[in-house]
Image 1: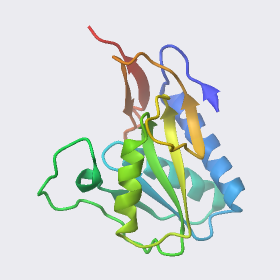
Image 2: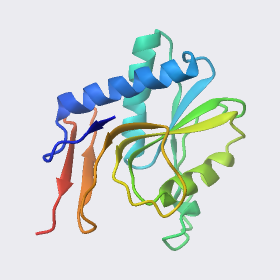
Image 3: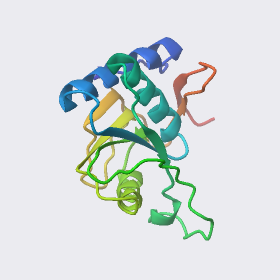
Image 4: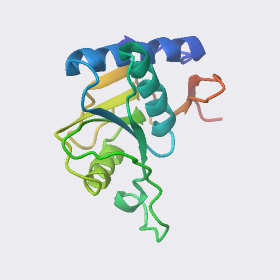
Length: 176
């Protein structure tokens, strides 16, 4: 895991970081057999797609990727009556799931994601991959795979944009 520069990451940095993470995931799992990737909506899903693509490129086999809606499982927002937007077009039961989010801080999003994921089946194992770990946990949840680690002030946030057109960027947004 590399520390993030003061200005963030550009497209080249994001690509290199995701490639390194893909290699690490495949190495620790002995390849892509029974491996699936699930990204937390909204911003974890584009990162998950890129990570799955990188792993598929390395292994030469497809790595299934889906998206996970956690809105109904959050403890920091009012319950919603909106229908769930998850799209997981494969079985998760018995699979090794790589749960992906773009940034981890308190751990509450991941707690909600695990609750939501269990509605789709019972994985053999769940590992967590995050592009950025900004510290500040409130729950005992730690990622298995981290792209970059950084600490920012409480009033700052990290903007992650991973687009299909290659306009990838990670930057610290400071208050005006």
